[in-house]
Image (tube, rainbow, N blue to C red):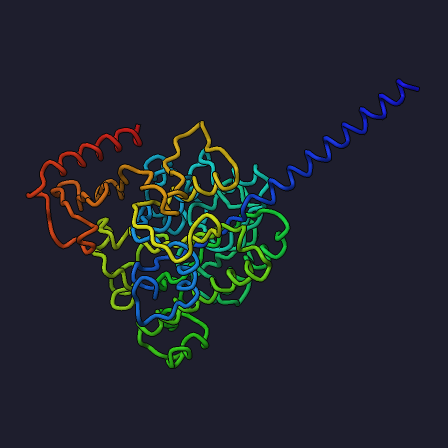
Length: 454
């Protein structure tokens, strides 16, 4: 009898321990935040109200800035889409992950793009039990093994390539929209399509921590190659967003059309924010918004309508207008609302921040260049980087260290030095006055380049 009693007691204790352990696991999972990562495509530093634009209507992004921290010195790893996205998702400098060029038309459709040995953010988050989804622009390769659902995302609705038509979803006259790995057809406006997919995913996964990446294609400039003969190549938006400004939907003013596109993007982002709030998820959601790179300021691609003000922009020469981008982060309880972060941060930091938030360790089988910026964003620590480095196509290169930025626009060009805190527009050359800083930062760049290209 005693023996039986002992067995019963032991079994009861074992069940109790297992039950408590399972409950603890559920509580731990409940404490881990949802992670929502939203990117714009070529949105300029000066294209939103919270960054000083008084013409474009962006009430949702302005509200997001009031609810979290607005970054003034956040950098993309590259001035182009493909390269910046690969750096974001791997947490590694382009020179380290190997994708240093913008994918061409055929590479976007069937190319490997980012090599398969690189592991992406959703791969690690899924190991932590997060359902993962991507809705929007991929642009880092779509060969077998390169597609989102083969690289850590449970779900994908989006397009392979670059600047698709906002309604027909073609890229250079080839249909480019997919669900998973299969073609997907819809006549929905792309910003609405991606926002609605994100909202549906959030609604479906509201009871557990989730990760959703929403890389919008707006406000990327329109592609002439994606238009049938006789169809105007112009920025596209639903009629209601032109009417908000009092414009005709048929206006041919490129500035008016661009404003409507940005406001339509803002409204789509607002719907995602509203879904999070309506479901009562705001307090346990880390939400990050930024632009993949600056606005392209050349004829037909943003000139006279988009804005990187007050930053300097010249082609793809790595002036701040190309790589310093709007970024806002909302994380209630961790980041004070209505604050500003003036510390230099970079795209890859988001990788590190997301893994830390999810309770995951950084991988130890590869170098991760991102550093968790949570304390910096909360105003409790300086930038986790001594310096940030940039190199594009092996020619333009730059270093940002504290208030200074060292820049070379080409291999045979001299170094330029700017104080980008006092001189955001990079107008005053300091190289002749501060040669010791030029030497120091140039040495840092050479040492960095030798390491990442090893």
